[in-house]
Image 1: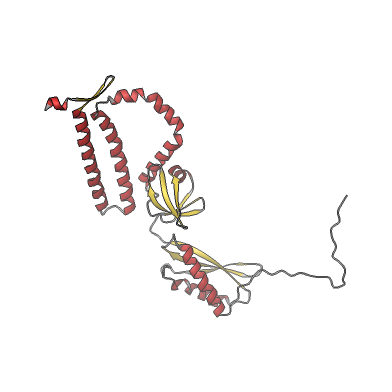
Image 2: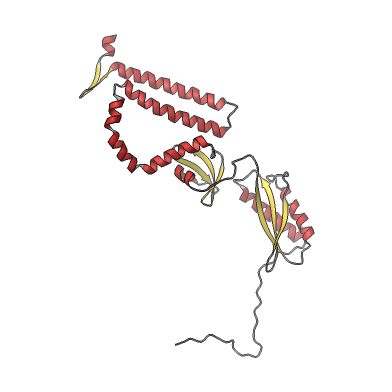
Length: 281
């Protein structure tokens, strides 16, 4: 049996691969595969972690085990790891300079997974665009926009830019709709009507309750702000559209006018033409 296992499969210079090296590698890969499956089940069955943290812990575990497995696999195949690292030091330095942006993305991915300030399912605002986080990998993060388009963002952009996380905490978010009405409006009646409108929408929270602010005197309108709370942050524009439609019908039903900008043009009555600027020269 020993003679069979010592059978040389490959010889290349000073390197020799025997049959037992190959068997050791196959057994090791099988053990690692089973370990990853069992570890994933343990993590996702945990009741102390939320789904986003389970994803982060599982990903980090996979990458850590994969890295260690590569090193151990090379050792099982008979490679001298210390010699390989020493011989490839110069190459690694060159690769480090050439792939610094790639390494930056990898380090940023580790930060995102460990820091947990950004999790799968979060609603984030990046460069003025709203996205829902679908997947966080070591190099990139996959997000989906409100137009149902998938976007691949480098992790370094998420750690190096200003990112607004709308779902960082469990507290609902507040949104605002601006309304302008004419100066003849009964503002007490208007404010009461506006406060009741969002409560009819099934996605608007009743606690905290919607409220109205008298914000400003504009040139041709009184400006009011209607504030409401919802947990449906990613689809809030649809909710705001529904509320605007209800506002329009309610104001029309109660005879409250929505003014538009007006301009007064004066004409001379003596028939003379208006003074025109004269060209110089």
